[in-house]
Amino acid sequence: MNTARANTLCARALIEGLALEGVRHAVVTPGSRSTPLVFALADQSQVRPWLILDERSAGFFALGLARALGEPVAIACTSGTAVANLAPAIVEANLSRVPVIALTADRPPRLRDVGAAQTIDQVHFFGRQVRWSVDLPVPSLAAAQAFTAAGRRAARASLEALPGPVQVNVPFDEPLIEPPAEHPGPWEPRMGACSRPRYEPDSAALERVAALAAAARRPLIIAGPETGGLPVDPLLALAEALDAPLLADPLSGLRAGVERDAPVLDAFDAWLRGARVGEPDFVLRFGAAPTSKTLNQLLAALPAALHVVVDRPGGYREPNGLSPVVLVGDPAVVAEALACAGLPRAEPGWRAAWASADRAARNALDTAAATDDLFEGRVFALLRELLPAGATVVAGNSMPVRDLENFFGVRSAPATITANRGANGIDGVMSSAAGAAASGSPTVVVVGDVSFHHDTNALWAVREHHLPLLAIVVNNNGGGIFHYLPQVAHDRSFERWFATPPNLDFRHAARLFDLEYTCAVDWPTFERALARWCDSPAPAVLELRTDRRLNVALHQRAWDAAVAAASEVLER
Image (cartoon, rainbow, N blue to C red):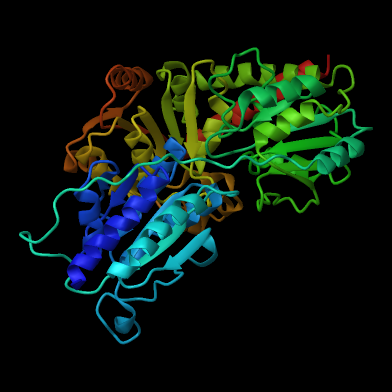
């Protein structure tokens, strides 16, 4: 068999291996060495290929799509620095536990480490950031079965105990593809379904937790960030069984599609800055460490309490330096088991005090957000009220995710709320949101101006694929988060080196990509633009220009009001 035909055969075998394990989407970036992979995807209709022009954007697009679907998404790229440009998204996929499969085309071994063009050391390139990595043989008739097996194993590895990214390095020799007259016709891979393994908690570990918690009377349940969301009903049932406060991170899956009278606390980041109910003696945490710095500081200050962290096999997410008991298993299964484990109920009034303080703080935050000033926190209060059921909200890092924390609250209409909180980077947020929109969900992304500038490449994909994405750019001309950090006290250096004002007018970015654009100079303009998009989701940019320094004062006023309201309730 000639080289070109072997490349086609093995590339198709690899894609079929992925398809057999339920992979339905693949992101494709331009390049030469990846030609056999591109044709293998373009010549069939079972696995949908998405063209993205730049690898860094493509990596985050794949991540956003995989997270939205809850299933693996492949990404095919050419050799050399194209592979390196996937690294930021692979890091995020690792820490956020998102199944992304990097198909990295490469030169054959004889061209490695000899100065061949566009050749770097790609073998196991991502190191410990991936769950599994393989360097396949050069394609041949005999190797086709190994390519199918590698595709199947890659898809399974991305979904096993601890979901995450994998790398399949694929060396192709030249000629890469047959001439048109000799190239095989269209083909269709066999399709299967992806499945996640179910992990039961160890009965002895459950008994140990029950024994350790036997004397606890002030339990606290933390629902932290989790890709795909935590199980709502089992956690609510567990909170009822323990009569415990349930503190829900905005990325936990418990802030939307939950009735307002559910035992879910959502304003704690604000009121715990200055008010206290009492000291918990049993902390039960699901998901990653909370977004709230205030809550993390409170947990770190409870070394005498029993801390139990629920996680999947191989996971360990405890950055506070404590020594928790780790319960291994699926969160839903563990929550159901704990609810039936005979754990003691809280002392009378414990949960009621937390709930009363939280409700008072939520009312204070909502009142503060209703100001006529262009207060950044009001963006999320309006999204809570106006977004259609089933929409997706993607929050940028730095200030947007913190405003999501404080001002979105809880709503009964379902919505998916996500952010790139694995590595907390401001890069790739727009591309991740574009990937989420590619799942078909109307998607709103809220980003700062610096983060938007980082990833304007994503707007090409938004236009090209006509994605239902609204980009809300909170433009305070710089890094607003630094106004809350010690660097702000250094007047001479702060504005230039930390606030870093870009001084950009984003109407030109929208025009470059032919996107609808609105600049909101007041809240009525903002609300009208948001309402239009909700009625007919389509690619659009909505810019809100705010003042960094005024927002510091408005945030502090809101937090002070929340603390005062909670304190008043607790002191009665």
